[in-house]
Length: 59
Picture (tube, rainbow, N blue to C red):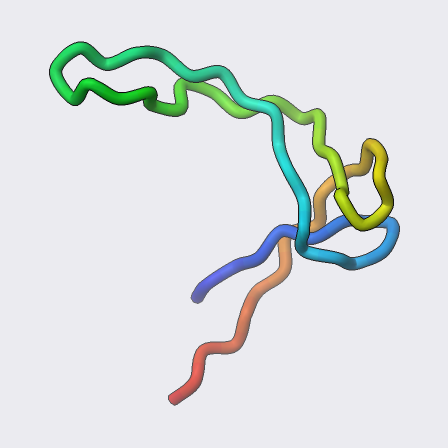
């Protein structure tokens, strides 16, 4: 089952989550090392908490 994360205030899906990234020498790319609890909603233009919602998949 797929999931979406939405803003707890407006229900919008245009949200961002703060994270730590580390440089991987072998991959030559940044890899997410940890996610933080701080979230930002572009629709509300402010801090929010995220709600995890299941998405029904087409059959």
